[in-house]
Image (cartoon, rainbow, N blue to C red; front, side, top):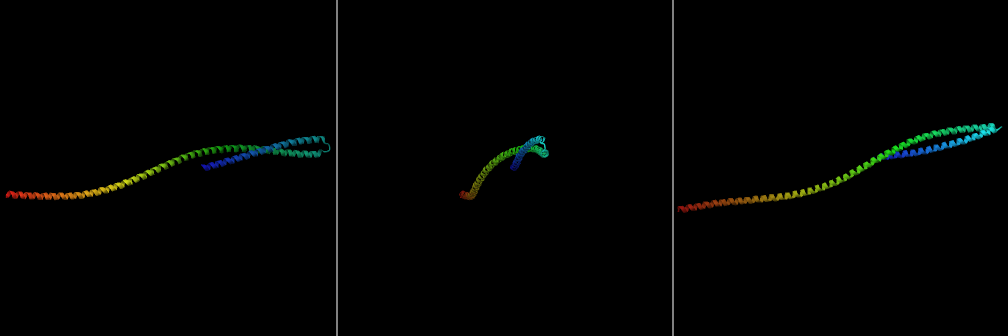
Length: 208
């Protein structure tokens, strides 16, 4: 869009330069036409004076006629030049009108491009701000994730330590249980033996 805007600006500048050149050319042609018209009036006055001199002259008729013919040819040339200048002026005016129309169209296109560029700039600014906010949110989420992973690692370490403590305590209780079980079995055996001894003693006393 920026490249297109530069192209449109360059096109508008060229159109403006062409318009100024056409204006200068039209002014120059108009000056030429005015000068030719003045020269034509001056020559016509000169012809009138020659006519008066021709009418008043007696023996100098032929030189005056030659001068008159030269003046008439010069007048015809000036008229042709004035007509060409007028035609060129009309052509220049037409070119000027076309250039003005092109210049106005280029200015409108430039304004439209500037409006589009402004809209794109605002949209770009909005997206940049949104990207910054998203980046900040992502950074915060990443930090929160890192903290959560740290806490999870600590909890896992604590859990492993507690699990090891529980395993050791379970093994200790298992050993203690086995020891107590042996004691119970020994006590039961001793009790059974004691019962046997008491029964034998009672039987001996009864028989005795």
